[in-house]
Image (cartoon, rainbow, N blue to C red; front, side, top):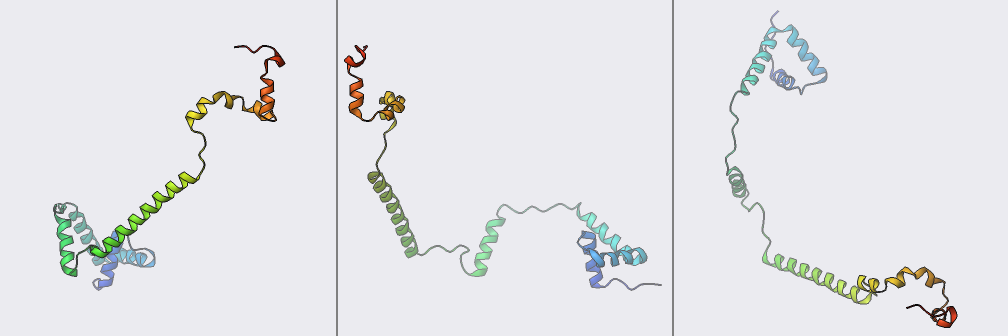
Length: 161
């Protein structure tokens, strides 16, 4: 029994099947038709052979100015520039905001650096290295007078130079 030729939907399904995009029940139905219908199988073989031949064709490369031509054509189609420029008043407003932000940052920096107490720098710590090394002993002392009394030569004998 001769089957009718493939409908447009069946041809679309066949193309999707050959691409690996057809799954589920439509794929099983098409596989069954290909197994039993020589005309459908011939159509599938013809499409597969045609696609295999496409691999032998040279691949076109876009020209160097393809991007600029495309952008200019898009600009003429829309009637506007593809990227609108800011009006002068917008530029002035933006520059004002940037300047205000920079002034606020600089003012905040100088205000904080002037108000906050600064600790000793590296050069001051290096100069008083002995004090830092013996800090644990100084923490035990009640006050500076106690330390001066300890420094008296008559308490422990003559101080060594």
